[in-house]
Image (cartoon, rainbow, N blue to C red; front, side, top):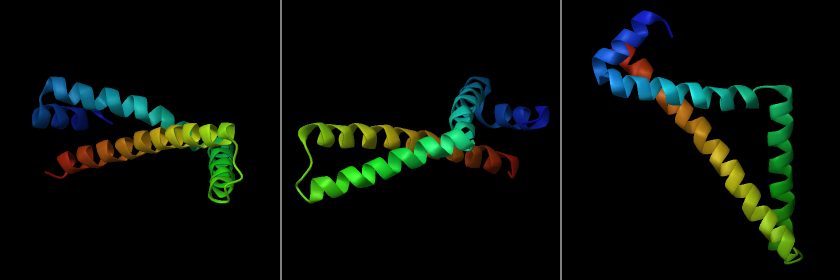
Length: 101
């Protein structure tokens, strides 16, 4: 973001809320950027493959209690990642809308 964009954001939302937007955007940007790397893609792919495999075992009723717990934990983690990424893009959209006002 450039200075003019930040000023428009401050004018639209006030300094405190604009600061909060920028802080959240900075934090979520790190997550989005991490998943855009080769290592991030491998981590995400491995998690999704493991979730799929565990879900099949749960549906087939062959999953152990540990596998069921692993499934729940991985689902929570992936859902948290997804929420952070979605929140990041929502913030970007909100900021872009301010620019077009």
